Image (cartoon, rainbow, N blue to C red; front, side):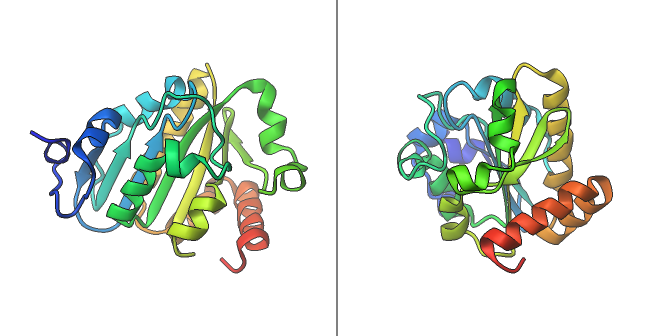
Length: 217
């Protein structure tokens, strides 16, 4: 049985190479729209804090949930690096092109000493992308790399990157709870309303950052 068949997907719809799908443990739950794609373990040792979260997630009540729990255990290359997606993240691009998801989520992890680098106000000036917002239990929320956001998704798509604090069980638990919400979300604006209700300040910052960086929301 091929990896596509294990995932309950037809080769015609999900045009992956079987070898690649077997290596990364590609899974598809449900069917129809909306299509959601969650990926974790993108580089370095991040898989130690993120992969298990996707391995434990349950199927959605409606629509499709595609998972790549482990993209790569190779060396750390930033997703902002032009070399990341065409090489180390090739499986992500294949999944995006095959699935055309309306919702795309990346799950990363960070060390405590790097919090300021990710969430500090100077991040935009320093590396050219907005700072992450701090949600709860050390979980950060921001946009995915503009290299994939601008090229592969329309503005109506929900594309988010979450950073989990390494070796922090509470951080992993909270991130898992947010993913449970997103896996049932049917559209970007629905999740925005959830953020406005649960995390109003972070929602305001995220919307402002998006408008300043990408244009109208």
